Length: 203
Image (cartoon, rainbow, N blue to C red; front, top):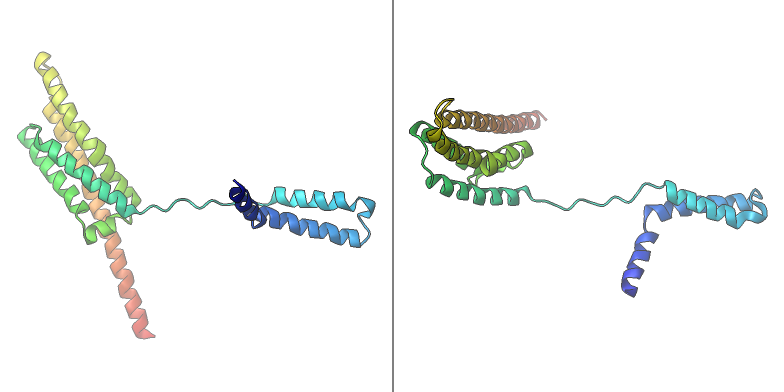
């Protein structure tokens, strides 16, 4: 307990609030020496110290460090579970082809290597792939299986197969946009390096 109190006191002595208050307190002492504060100089010094401590900006607490590569590792594990789930589910041939292509795209993006190294630099792309793997694809497949059972009881409306194909098609287009965006990032990086080498050569 004593050690905790000592460390807390030491942290306060080093804080911005104490430094700002001390600076204002020194200004109060200067006023006292100049004869401005008079007999009330202790009140003036204490008041200026308190004012300085109050107006000082709050201490900034650094956010905890996060390694995006660790998130990508967890996402790969979830993707493996998704593939295992899809392998056990029966889907129509048309949707099955779209699903296979979609999973191939995700697998290529998440495969350890330079593509994943580019992916990890784009938080929005990581979020899009994560949402698709953990939510969109499994929910689409599960909704198809549940709706297919009900469609046998009540005919009419758009078929569950058609809904699944449309959903997978939209997800496939999103995955292609993510891939195209990462390709542009890598192309810009290559162009930047080329420009750097050209400028270095001229110098």
